[in-house]
Image (cartoon, rainbow over the protein chains, first blue to last red):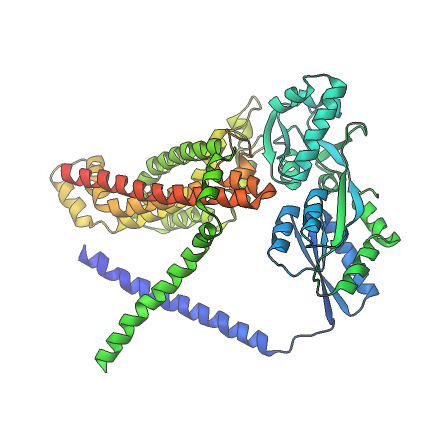
Length: 274
Length: 270
């Protein structure tokens, strides 16, 4: 017992010395990096908080905006609208907030955290099914025939829209439409990409996501439009954050997103225009 | 000179220790500082809590049983084995700790999903384990087993081989030596490993969401319920988090005590 126990501290000490050396090396190299002067080509940084679904469109717009404003660097923070809202409420330094949901924006406006919002894009929910699944439904009316349906949880916007669509569909297709669909719901996901992942991996037979998200997986999923008398289109509002470090630039960004170029880039990413 | 050094070391040690304790405990206290007792009560009454708490307790108990039943013999074998093969297996078993849980969930889907690697062999009729309570347990076992196996392996390694030899020379069969000598001697390490593994399973979120989905009463464990509440109401999420922390703390104390008692009983029988 003593022999084996006695050898342990030596090993531990060796491991500790090795670890300490690594830490020292890391600190040393960090210090070296810091001592070099950082290239500072751009003087102003515009910080944009945006819903995850805007990532592709806004990233493209960011480069365009920087081309038009050579001294400005656009920094994005993409996350779920609720996460961004929490960050803003805890005093995160942002200039612009672009939300995937009207409700969060309205509540922020009531709390005077943001200025008056403008709706700059619409995003239309669509039905997605795995591409190589012959049994999967092809239209919204066939949705109850799917064995495994994945939707958003009612706490997130896509889930709320789905609920409202099911209510409208019940009025159109018959009283048991909603209950037949809900009997086959196997998961209520926390965001659109989770819904999409499960459908594109073939794990679920049908899901409801935004058109802009469905584009990302268009080689793996089949996309079907939802009839306009049932569909609930998502509105994307954007506002300048109260106390923004760069209010003028922030307004320039809002103008740019609503300009012809901005709207074209949004359309390319699958959004429709208000 | 020597005395002063001794004094410095004596004061330094608690300071170093205390700073880490503070770093680990302050965020947990902040969770409670912002809320009141009535918040906690409201949290308990939140519609998401009941089913999620029940599901968390059931699934983590099951995964703990699976982990201990399968992990103990494995750890024993690893502790006794020598050679590169055993070391490689041991290192590979640590990987689930390193990879992000969501990636673990994707990996589970790619392996055991409806179109997974072993799908045709596992479910020829097209069914799959995804979106079931079993999937929750599997995800928990996947992320938590390495903690137990690691702790158990080092615990078994510290058992004096001469004691095992003595037991064998008295005519005890290997299984009896394992159960009556090795396990009781390694018990403190096994208990610590089991508690850590259980705690990891209780907090498991990413792999579960990916592999099992999020459906109340079926796959929505407490961490998933917290995240779901976070989407609409931060205060509710905070209340639910307090419940998770309290439940985890009480159960950790209880599980450790219970496991230790049963281990001590084993020693006495021996």
